[in-house]
Length: 363
Image (cartoon, rainbow, N blue to C red):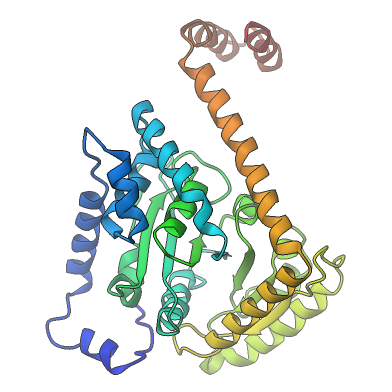
């Protein structure tokens, strides 16, 4: 396991004698996640909300568990807490980070997150782990890869499985962002699975979208592709160190050329390409300074506020569609007819299109 470069005397002490082994840390992290997600049968939402607003991490964990719960009574409580939490997001920065598996997203967040807490910020990380389509399980191992932040009192890490959600983010990530902001975390990182073109979901819920890329991984072709590269507000070539540095510099040149081929963004921002190494802790400060510059420019020209409004619009539409789908799935008449039509489709006695049309007419 790669360990980020030590940042201070305090962090060196944390890595001294008695440091848990990776295997022990993994077990401890998973057990803490499970215990923090226990939701009491009877929940006083007012007490929980007050503790949340005081910055109590346990209250934050329980509030997110209520949001993620499948129980309708938990949904009602969660909605009340979210309503109370909405006003606290005005001064936060929401940053999405994506990239292919193995690009170093977790190590990068651990490095830049530690830098931000040293600067006086409170950092929350919503790290989304892929779920198995067969077992529905998820490793939830991001705390083991973010060893510095996992021990930082000014940081909070919440690994969450994607479940059946598309777009590389969990279905309740947006609600979790609001709760983290209410708990006093002013910089929210959303680490996505890194599934490629469908990352538009995270792009719709953040203020800044960062794409991490590897040096020497078909850069001249990847840079020309539209989709995720076109959505990025910046590209950081990670692992730009040692023998990979020349490849990283070539990748930077190719991406810079490719970005100039895209239409200019409405907010007037010109996407940047930077080099960094989360392992060597180089270029991290430059990435943060670029994000601060972006927030400053878009705040001044009004696009930051307009993007927040667009995020709320997208949140409403998604919540409506999810609720509508849930209501249909719970309707006994619809469920019964759906099973009959599904059987006819599977036996090729009816086309899927005709079956879907019949079910929609019933709805």
